[in-house]
Image 1 (tube, rainbow, N blue to C red):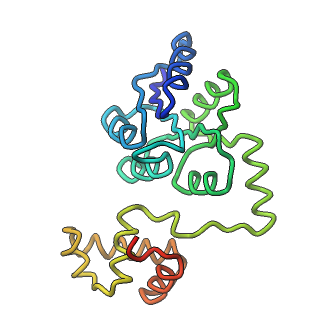
Image 2 (cartoon, rainbow, N blue to C red):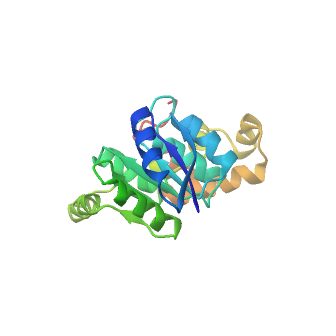
Length: 211
């Protein structure tokens, strides 16, 4: 039995999906969350097999919720289910670590099948979304590298840009010096820069400082 958590701010969507899945023998809805923040709490507490995640929600959107969940629980399998197919949603969602991206125009049976495949470890990208990604790659599309940074890494990057040393960052965030060094290493790698100066330039260029 696949344990499923549904995160969506539309009650009718949650009710409709829950009602459909209730007649299936292999999928059990163990909870529903109406926003990303609640979805994070329920995901980390219940550890469902698959999380069905909406993108546009109040309090915390699906992209941020996906990042937070995977930061705390890297093994989580998150399947995005949304009405949006624009670049600002598709790329950040996939870069955040989502296991798949599905549109709400999909049939209930297709959604159920995608949940099963996500649970088995497959990466699910709906054909329409896949075509758009390929078109953008063919046109040289490249998303902002900082979209791949975790919330904590963004905090560290802002403090680097403010001129703080590793020790000062550790004291500011109440974390160990070793942890700071790990974050800095990850930041430089993800931003594809070689030192703190280049990371600072990147931060200012992309308006990350003092956000």
